[in-house]
Structures are given as structure tokens and as C-alpha cells.
Image (cartoon, rainbow, N blue to C red):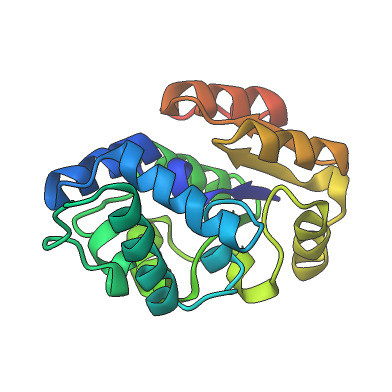
Length: 214
């Protein structure tokens, strides 16, 4: 069973999404990341955990983001940002990573089960599902906001195993974050850290013996 992360693997790199959001709203990646961290810190969790664990609704979280951005950046122009519907604006125009889509389809064609294991947000589901639609039907989706556990918590991997009915030794994670790959390996999974598309496809093929993607 090959589990693909959504953000940064099946989607474009996260830095590209931050840059695109900056171009649309004028909010710099640094300003946005600092605000994400501040809102998370208020709940004593990681930056995106408030919405990836559904501790806050998107609207509640959006209000908090506006507040901390204005506090940290007096006079900041937020007129182009729609934090109450952040996901809709964040994913506007985003297309799936075509190489990783091909890799997922290639794996399915060669008899591997494919799943998506993602830290994600309840209100963002229509947008990210539309983005990954080119992958086609997958065997299992495990989403942090639906189960109340997020990567790299070891429990999310156990929940994924149970949901898919697959033992740890048959699970492979493809994820762009080193800490998620490390956590997966600690519970008996194998993992490929995505750094770029060519490297990830090559490493995955080498790890599981998948024929080369032409």
C-alpha cells in the first residue's frame, strides 16, 4: 500500500503555493507563516493544527489569522485576502503535480494499492479532492481533520493501517516532510521523502521494485 501525502506531493510544492498566495493577496510567505505559528501557539499546538485537527472552524481560524496579522503588521492591507474562505482562495488555480499523479496511476496499474494520508482541513475538502481527481479512485483516504490525529503522531499511521486493513510492513509513505517520514519508519513503515518529482519517483521505484515510470 503506497500512501501519498497531498500537500507538497500530489499538490505543487508548498513554497510555490505560498508565493502564489502572496501574488494574489500581497501577504508575504514570512508574514503568513508567522501568523500561522502565532495562531497555533495560542492553542499550544503546531501552526496548522487548529484547523487540521478541526479545533477551529475555517471561519474562526480566519478571524484569528486576521487579528494576529494586524497586530504583527500595523497598517497591513488585507483587502485582497479572504480568510473566512481561505481554502477557496489558497487553492485557486492549483493543479496536481502531474509527475506524482502519473506515479500513483502507474503504481495502481502494477497492482499496488494507493491511498492518501494527509493533514488537511474539513472545509478544504472540495478543493483538494478536485485537485487530486486525476489520480482516479484510491483505495483509502485518511484525513487528519476527520480522525482528530495528524502526522507525525504515530497514531495516525496505526489508524491508516486499520482503515486500509494493511500491516505496517506493507505500507509506504511518500511525504515531503522529513519528520513525517521519520515517524512512519518508527512504526514499521517504509518511507520516501519527496524533495522533487524525479527523485521521489526514482526512490519509490527502488524501494518497492516498481517498474520505471516512462
